[in-house]
Length: 271
Length: 255
Image (cartoon, rainbow over all chains, first blue to last red; front, side, top):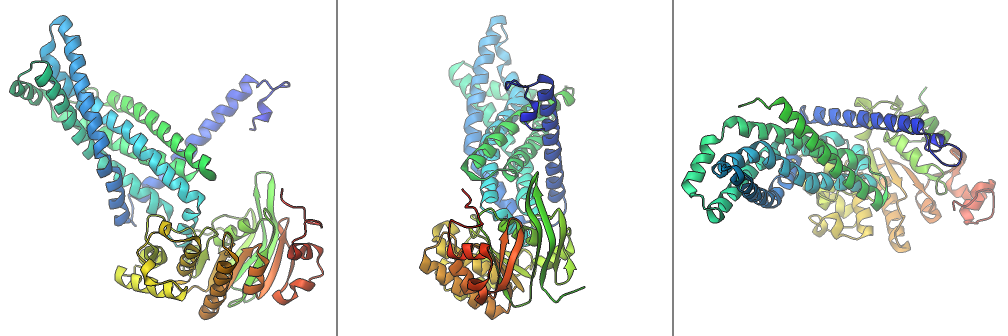
């Protein structure tokens, strides 16, 4: 439905028509994204694969994200320890800092911060790269050279996302906990050995697993949103820029939504 | 019934929403012949080419390759067609992330399963055919000039020895001397391969040089077709206006 048809005389939109058009537009977008996701997953989990592309994407998504993930995790862990100490001291619960830091980092913050940072660094990057390929006819060129873009472009990024995110999250967990440990022992008077023993005693494998399950889902979201928005990028610098923005915002929102959904499903896991 | 043409477009229609771009294009090219399709900006040349290549699907009509209907097929028949064609894109469309030789050898490496060493040798051999040295083989597309990119694009189009090569505005964006060199290479390489060629252009110098036959696309239909030697005596007002590059005439400038 065109915008013109949803307007009354004088230019004011009819609210019901506008709502209907917006709903239809949203459903169509969900449909297109679902088809794209299905095709990407179909290409990712069936031959033929392009191992060189998968390795290249694992390096681009995983290895080159290490600095941003490490720095984010250390500051989040440090800030978390400070805030728990400050809040806990109001009712004499300062000693729980190691326990709450490790629980918060492994189940929630390590994976969410990693996901959000990669939504910006990776999803937007994929959208910009694919968008530029689209507008310079490189995707058409792939097809004429008998290469399926889903197998050559999108599946390697999807596989790299779901394989590298869990590794990045494990690293973020370790660095985040060490950030909390550093602040607690250097600034809050905790004994180093006691802090680490409390951390390890309280941590369960289920806590880590919850974070890793989320990481796999976030890796898929980051790769799919980047690929989808890049693929439907319109011509010109503006189109590519919009694709990168939509990919980043879409991936970030979906990461937070999936985070809540998976947390709800796994809330009793390991408790 | 087969006409012996390598590629045939029969009554091809293509619309985008309410806008009808192709309104019944009929065209064919015989093996070893070079057909140039002329047309102004927005006349539907690129859409026609994309339909022929299978990058778009017509709303109506048929596309035959070697007598086989490939109109709606994205499976084995279309793949068999793509194995026998080459394409030089307007912007060359080289893959930024690959080196020059990997671009040229893309099909050999990915579709034909050729070993990298052999594919690189073949790519360098093809670079020589388009008058480029082996020193550019390991550069990336961003490190070479626009004219060199066109040559690399041509090398990629001919490396697998296709039966049919498509050229999309092969001289756009090039200076007259480089454009002429590209035209010479197109003629030389298509003749050497014995390949048919379908080119779309609005560059008359290019059309005169590379065409055996010329067709004129206007408002979504072919309005004239004939030997390249008869383009100046077509007797068609649209063709005359286009050939002489006049703003006045039946074709309205795309402003």
